[in-house]
Length: 64
Image (tube, rainbow, N blue to C red; front, side, top):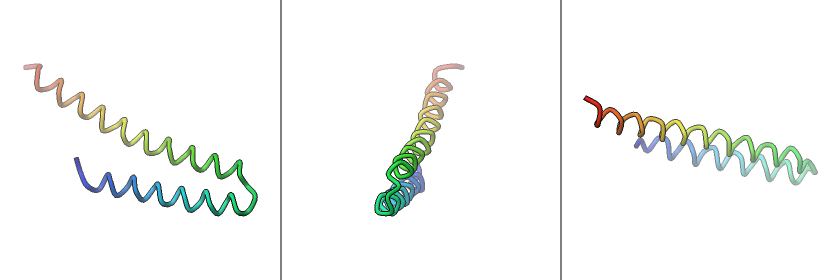
């Protein structure tokens, strides 16, 4: 597992939290919620991709 992935996830989290705070303070709670949801989806897609790679690696170990 790369350390770059952890930094990417942390960067997305920081960016989403800052944008969420700015949007909440300006009275756009709906846009803040959508921003948070978009950040969550992006991170989940990154994690699902890694899990897929893990399963492919495990499968290749047991198949000749």
